[in-house]
Image 1 (cartoon, rainbow, N blue to C red):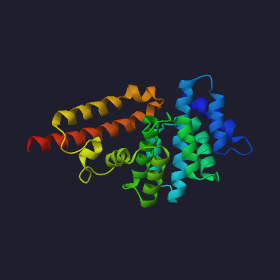
Image 2 (image 1 turned 180 degrees about the vertical axis):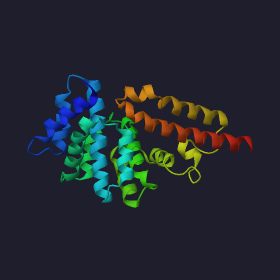
Image 3 (image 1 turned 135 degrees about the horizontal axis):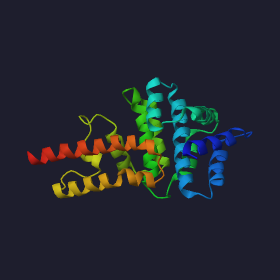
Image 4 (image 1 turned 90 degrees about the vertical axis):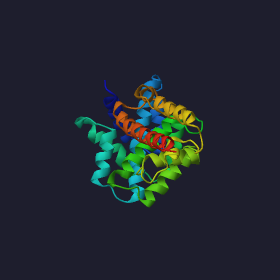
Length: 239
């Protein structure tokens, strides 16, 4: 049975409950998949992405076709499961609990409990990918994403690195993208670059519980890291 079949069964079960608020959804993930930690991580990531995407759409007020397509780039949902995913999306959107409550619960469900948790960064990256799908991150979306990062305990400097990956590199500081201070030697920059590439290898992301489709987002993340490194390298060579 695929991850989407399991997720579909789970959504059907949750949607049939009388309340189905965020607390019910989180507790259901813990209970239903308690015997399979790997599957629970993958389901938890998918639930968090779907639910927080819905909350971001509610905060922004509109859902564009570009955002729908961006969501579909992250999750290639089988046709027979699109209805179930839409049910969870609508459930989260209708839930009276605010996005901060959702973010806090999802951090407990998916996170490591430490600052700059990799899986929570993955969720934030996915939200950025959807937010910028229409060409820019709007003010309300930016406020939403920054607050999510705070709840996820992503430190401000680290958040700025994530933000810089999602803006035009012509305007972004490549040192910020790599999360390294200016003035470092080229060898230090190269070590930082290699670590980022290693940390974002597809095998590592899958081991964290990300669905296979999310590798497309990782590819775009690596592209931004590569571009920043190349800009620094060119600048240092001509210095």
